[in-house]
Length: 170
Image (cartoon, rainbow, N blue to C red; front, side, top):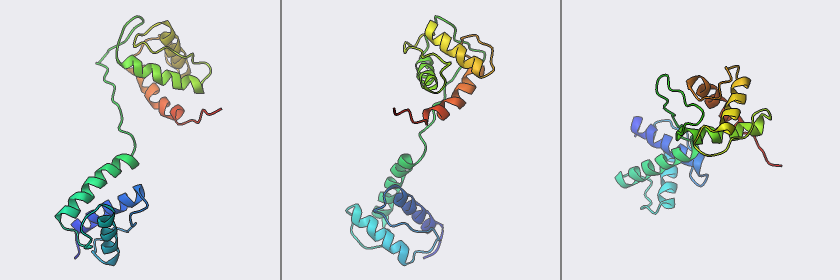
């Protein structure tokens, strides 16, 4: 057998092998040859399916289900999109659920940059959060308003992942 469904099967089996080395790693070539048969046989054995080496409907559905889970495990974490309305500015004293994220991000950035003071975790743009935002704005070349707007959000969202991947173990 040759074709795109076979290449799709092989691609899914390869991803499973990247996620779990007990699966057989194969090269997707679109040919259901001995390597694919071995990989399918191993998959069936590992997942309690009848061991035939043939991809029947039950095997296909099990591969797809495991593949979907493997993609989540080996892929990047799903991003969070913070939605600030056009022109929205969160000012000192205001409460907003996005501020919990911002405060967590600023706490992480404060571990990397000594000039950024740690904020609290209140969901309110309190004095500590405003001071932290202002310090971050200064480092980013932005006006030091201490407010949260889209001009501050963009460099915050870009800088946070760089600091979050730093090892802070003593």
